[in-house]
Image 1: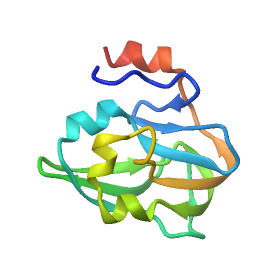
Image 2: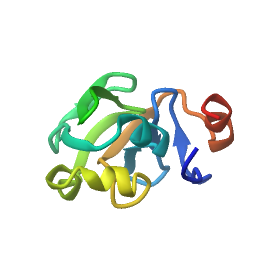
Image 3: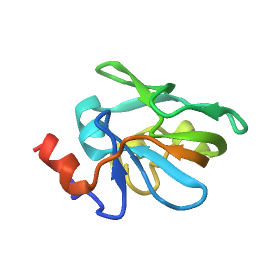
Length: 123
């Protein structure tokens, strides 16, 4: 694994992360960013959209493939990272920081893992 996983975040088996702030910030892990290769396009939900835990909420296109983005939470989108939409490479270079994807006013959280549990699945 190329980057240390922040222990303050929670993770999904589909390689998304979420924090416990309000609103919650969502992104993809360094494992996903590395596997995708150079990310060239992001399709994200719009502000005000309702997202459901486990549902597809967007797509991430790289030079290798197109992957679906799944929501780790249910709620309403309050912000989209326009800087990442404009320059998707920031998701590769800083997936846990400037490469965050969206913020959601959470109504419920789905099954998530600690960094240690996620690391065990993705050695």
